[in-house]
Image 1 (spheres, rainbow, N blue to C red):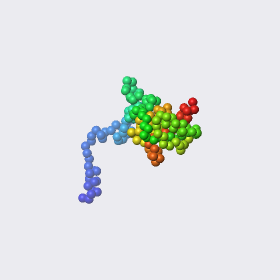
Image 2: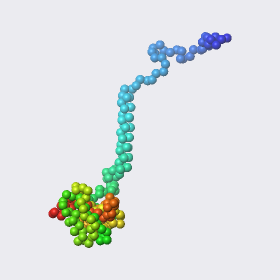
Image 3: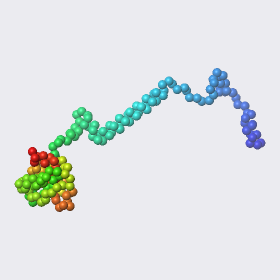
Image 4: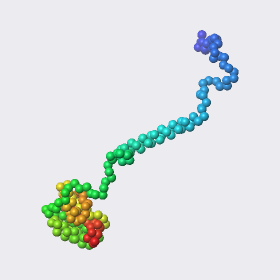
Amino acid sequence: MTPTGKLSHVMAQKFPADRFDQAPSDIERVGAHRAPLQPGRRWVTFGWAALATVVLVVAGIVTISLYNNELLRILPGSSAEETPSDEPVQTAEPTLDPATPVMVLNGTSTSGLAATAAEALTAAGLTIDVTANADEDTVQSTVVVYATPELEGAARGIAQSLGTTEVREGTEFAEAGASLVVVLGADYAALVAG
């Protein structure tokens, strides 16, 4: 018997009738079908997706806020850091060190301002090494720059003698060999003129 003969033999074979052979004649569909969508089902799906999006966005905002410590400031009864005040934080006591020479630079267009400041500092007992004009003449705030942390107290003493409070550590004047440098600004010019 050839393979085609086997197939025709199987097809010719009769099987007993069962309940699937007697389908009602009023059914138009044949095969498996999905039930029709309920009205509003798409809106329910959209609503769940929108809710999930809102939850994820809020979770991200809360996480970033916690990371930046912003939420602690907003919550009632929290002990978040207070906003910094305008008062400068002093870490060293102001002292006057006559052994360390001071460079005085005029950062304004006011003529003779460096010499005026040098006279005031000499009268306070300090040694003035150089008086000159700064590279720019538009400095607004007077600052005392100190080269090493050990000179912070001396820088604060100079600032106090000049009636200013701004001091900072910096090495931009190291090439000139200066470890204490006063850069006079418009605030000192106004103080001298007034």
